[in-house]
Image (cartoon, rainbow, N blue to C red; front, side):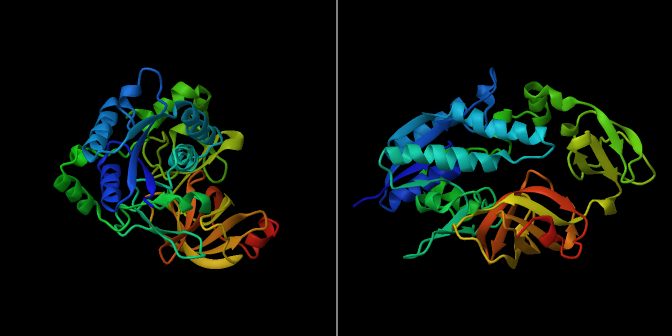
Length: 371
């Protein structure tokens, strides 16, 4: 029996080629594109669903001869992803809304739409790989093309979601995908990619926060590591960990943002060697296969989308959270981003980073969180 697959289309080259490849493999393909939330008066700039991108997706579907549906996801997107972004900043974090979007919108809301029309699978143009073996959970791996790998943002998926997932681009390079689009004459072949958050409509995230959560502009003290006040900041939201320019404090040596301390609305700055953190503490983990590894193990950890994987000693705590002790301090551990755990290219799981510290003290991982 022919299997039905819904392809989450965007009007871009990746999802368009994914649909074409699955059709060539014999699947019954259906295109589906979400209409996401935008601020009033800014919908034409939404990077994920402009009228132009919707038109391209329809044109691709027409060229392939597949059905195409537009799904209104504006309210659920606003209530989950946008609120996740705002709430994270209100808590003094730097959240990654793409994690919430993949968990709550694409692989829950849209997947349910696909299953409701009788689809066996849902596919996207993400660059990741999965393996399926009899009587084993589906496993998630990095893409063949490391420069395009998107496993970081898909580390939020669970076994039920992966059971219905297809990623036809995982073994291809971006160059190969683009060439396939050209060879097939797909109108998406020349589509430009955007790395911006879709709901920002091409603007600066700080401007978005000012419009939607103006209380985040509350001024406060700029302190050094000893608690001495060096100046006044203009709202913690305007600064990022590791930032050097635009702090408003000058000394003979370069100064960097070390910490954003929400409890007293203080911005902590210091010299370069104060940036490194050797230990991070993450929240409740999502284990992709549904099975947690051993309580203590060694693996590689990626602390943000563009970061390199770094070896660490990992301990899983009794409440399901975990801590990572890196062999060397890392500069950019940021609360609100995800810590994603890898082993031999497989994505084991992830959790949102809650805090970090300079060095691991004796038995601190065991003492801080009850086992």
